[in-house]
Structure formats: structure tokens, C-alpha cells
Length: 143
Image (cartoon, rainbow, N blue to C red; front, top):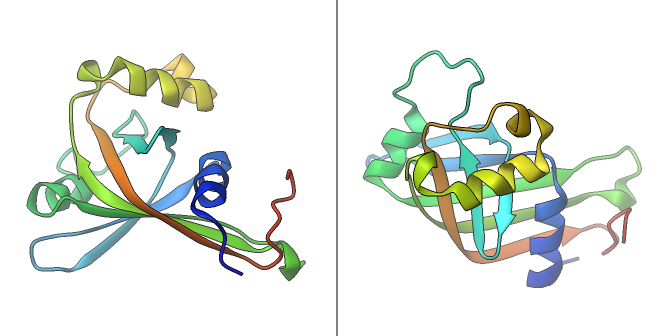
């Protein structure tokens, strides 16, 4: 069953990870797992200290060409009555972490790893225009 915008936003904010989808100028989709925080109608994720094969990340190049972004968080259990997913769609910008200490603090509040080593490179800051979702039962286990 479809869930309300408010419930979708809340369930998304409680998820520990999500997938972020971007597309370059040619429209080719690109999907990566991310950690994130929700602040109001903004989803923020960081280019952090985890090992990367390059600093010229495809997601950043895609956002420079096309700022549209989509995030998907979901929950799976063998008890299918507990299944749910939430999608957040919007437009993103890529400021330096030093420009948005409030958003770095939101990430650090959610993830201990960021308290120990705060992001200091780029952030991806997405202004969410649409929250949508589905749940098998309409209830989150913690509701």
C-alpha cells in the first residue's frame, strides 16, 4: 500500500543506508550506495574518507551535467508483511563540506564514523521535491 509523504520522509530518515541514482548528460543511469542524513527537506551525503578508486567520482560528474537525483531506501525481511521502500527525488548541488558545517554535524549525529572523522571534501545536498513509498503492511517495525 502507498504510504503518506510524511511517513515516507520519516521512514527514509530512519534508514541506515540508501542507494543514490544520478544520470549524466547522456542519460546513462548510475547507482551507488550512500550513507545520508535528512535535514528538513534536504538529503545530504558526503564524499568521505572511505577508499575510492578516484577523486573524479562519476556521481559528481553526473550532477555537474544533470542535477536531478533520486534516493531509494528499503527494508527486506523473509516476513514479506514487513517489506517497505521509500524514494526521495530532487535536485542536488555539490558544496564543499566547510561551507555547510550544519550538514556535516547532521551526518556526524547519525553516524559514529563521522564523529571520529568528519567529512571534509564535497557534500551532495539534495533538495527533495517528492517523497513516495510503499509498505506491505503500512507499519514500520518501530511504529
